Length: 189
Ligand code: ADP
Ligand code: 5GP
Image (cartoon, rainbow, N blue to C red; front, side, top):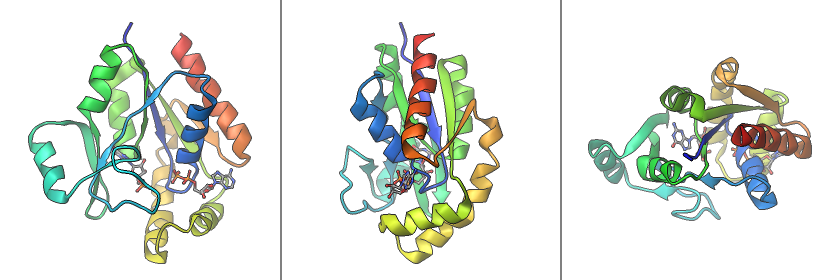
């Protein structure tokens, strides 16, 4: 049987990575993380091939020319992110479920491409103020980058109604439980 696609989107700092990592560590649902390509620089602690395939802009453009992406977006000015066919198509064909952490435009596109083989989940922040606090506390981005990300949050939240499910990440444990249940229900049907 073909594997399924799980799409997770949220404004930066909402806790997407924390939730995805926690579900993977718990190991109750079988899914593999699709490692995207990007031309942004790695953050401290991020590893090439694990968090992202970190590429130069030239390498990224070369992959676009070779039709290597299911989708790609300029998520922030000059910063490109893309879902590689090699991360999704072969694995699904081999029966593995794949989880994608992608922005709102990419999420809506991938939902259309995969139809009922995909489920989309939007992680909501309790408030935009709390989102800023989390990004400041995470301490991985400059204040300009944080302003840019918070500034974009309202635009991103306007896409939430287009997702199959919405989860508010106020209490982290509850958000993990809810997200895991949505995924396991979808996979088992
Ligand atoms: P994203 O992947 O969406 O950019 P992260 O998973 O990196 O976000 O989370 C951003 C920061 O917020 C991290 O420092 C994380 O530990 C923290 N965080 C995540 N969920 C919660 C929560 N429910 N309450 C408080 N802090 C949280
Ligand atoms: P970050 O720089 O915080 O890791 O990610 C920034 C944004 O890019 C997030 O909204 C994340 O979901 C999105 N993103 C990561 N990979 C992809 C991808 O392959 N395609 C698209 N469209 N967005 C992505």
